[in-house]
Image 1 (cartoon, rainbow, N blue to C red):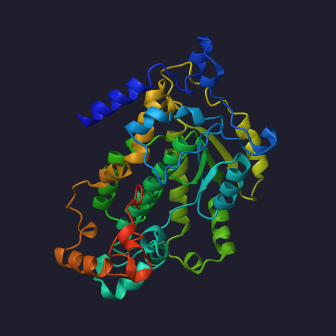
Image 2 (cartoon, rainbow, N blue to C red; image 1 turned 30 degrees about the vertical axis):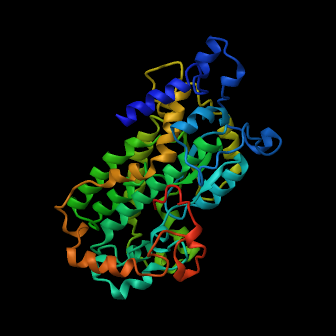
Image 3 (cartoon, rainbow, N blue to C red; image 1 turned 45 degrees about the vertical axis):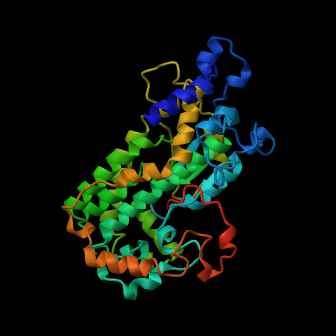
Length: 408
C-alpha cells in the first residue's frame, strides 16, 4: 500500500513533465528543447573541453532521495548525451582496467573498477578480516580470488563466485545511483550481466557442484531483473594463447602458478562470452568488439562510440534495444531513482533465496556462532562505522547521522 501511495504521489507532483528519453515523440510534438536529450555520446575532443553539468549533482552519498525529495528535485534535468552506462568486458589480462580508465577520462564519466572480495574482507578502518582465519572454523574462513587460483576445487569456491556476483550487483546499483543523481555517465569493468560466464566455466571444469550452480541461477533470476541493462558493452577480444601470454607477462604469482587458467578453462570462458553473453546483451545494448591482441587506441574506440545513435530504435515500440531506459514520464525517472538511491538494502535482500539443499553453501549453527563472536569483536566491527571508540572514533555522544545505503 505504501508503494502504491509513493508511486501515485510521485506521478502527481511530476504531472506534465516529459522525460528526455522520449526524444522522437518530443520532436513530433515540437516540445521545448529542455525536454530533449542528445542521442550521441561525445568525448572531450568533440566537446572541446570537460563536461559542463546542467545542474549541480545531488549529494546522494550523504542525503537520501525519497518521495518528498521528488517534489523539489527532478531527475531528467541532469541528463545529457553522456548519461549512459558502459560496461567493458573481456578475458582475463586483456587490458580492461587501463582501457576503462582512459575511456572514462575521455568521456568525462565515473569509473567503477572491477570488484573483488577486499570489499568484504577489508573493513572501513582498513583492518584485514582475513587475519581472523586462525580463530574461525574452516567453513567460515576467507576465500578470495587468490585462494581460488591456488585451490579451485575447495568447498568454498561456489560461495566465492556467488559473493562476486553479489558485489557486482551492489556496485551496479551504486553506478545507477550515480547516474540518476548526477547525470554523469559511468564506465564499469565487468557487470552482473556477464558474471554467469565464470560460474558456468567453473561448473564445466568441475570446480563447483550442480546444486551450487542451481542456487546461483536462482539468485541471478531473482535479482538481475531489478537492474537496468547497460547502454553499451565493449568487448576486448584476445585468443586463448594471447591470454596465457598476458597472464605470464603481468607476472602475478597466484595467476602464473594457478591450476585454474588452463586452456580448457579459458576456452570455456571465451565460448560462454561469445556464444551466450554477447549474443544476449546485443539484444538490448549497443555492442562494440575489438581485437585487443596487440592492445589498441582508446581514441579510436571513442570515435566509434560517437557515431552510435542510441535512440535510433525508439521509433519501434517492439524493439528491445534500450528498452530498460525508456521512461516516457518524469515520474517514472523519479521512481527509478528512489528505487536505486533509497532502497538498495531492499534490493540486496532479493539474495535471500531459501535453498538448504547444497551442503557446500551451508554452515552449522555452531560454526556461525563462532564466526559472529569473532567477526564482530574485530577492530572497528562492534558498531556502525564512525561509532567505534576502539579504533579512534570520537564525539560518539553528539553524532546523529547514520550512513546512507550502508550495504556492502
